[in-house]
Image (tube, rainbow, N blue to C red; front, side):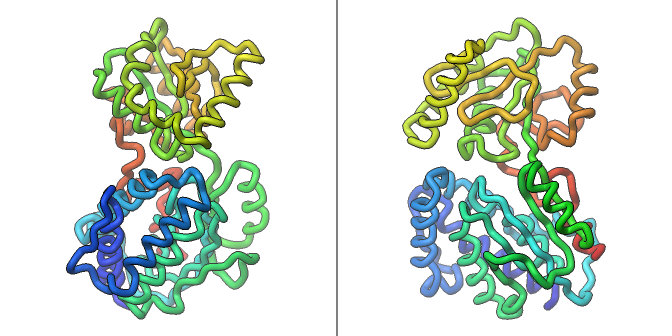
Length: 352
């Protein structure tokens, strides 16, 4: 199948997804095969929400909107421009997906198929409804994809390379189990924000999106703050207050109550506002409803620390501090060329 046909199919998939990305779902007149797939995908969204309490309608819509904006001809062309994609004999690439946020493994799925390979997908049980249905739509609009997409819940067999995402513990298992295969193995990472005290309220409001989107479950969610000594946390709490309805979500509220109780019983110093806590801690991975913070007094020393700890960090959010920083509010809207863990998966797939 020619590259342009693959691109065209994903662009049409983006058009299909876009219909479900707003609070009011509207059927597009020019979207192909809606008569077959539209109502079915509404049902899959309902199943996803019922199966996983973290997959709220708002979070599902946000994920779909992000992918609808990415799956355009312009975005895909810009993404693939640096590469030379040749029509070689396709290999079978196994993908082991996480399930922390909706469609979290879609970029790997897209990368494998757009480079002309076959994909063998093992999904997380937490996110098992959406992608198989979208794959069926993809096969319907481009029949050449039939036979190139396989989902399995069994042990992986008959594959040439693997992309696996998991915890630090499962990564050790993956590295051993797949030691004889070309692989990308992703481990735990967290995102951080470097604050100077000069941020505007608008900057901090955008940062609150980086913290709370998807309930903080993603590796691109900010879970750690680096702040100067004597930082005024009152402005920080003021800026994030618009997220207070999050405490109405039972799973989030249960985590907040539990972690607060643990901190109080352990007599840890922490600040909280009724739905969110911050605690001084050197760790990068904080519990749900909590961000850790650490003071710094020298920006250059902080840069050195972040460089030394880069294997634990997914994104660094700041304004005018670092060369590779991400803007406030932008962590959950990565471009197609913003690769997880900095691993260029397209380059990897073209090398197999």
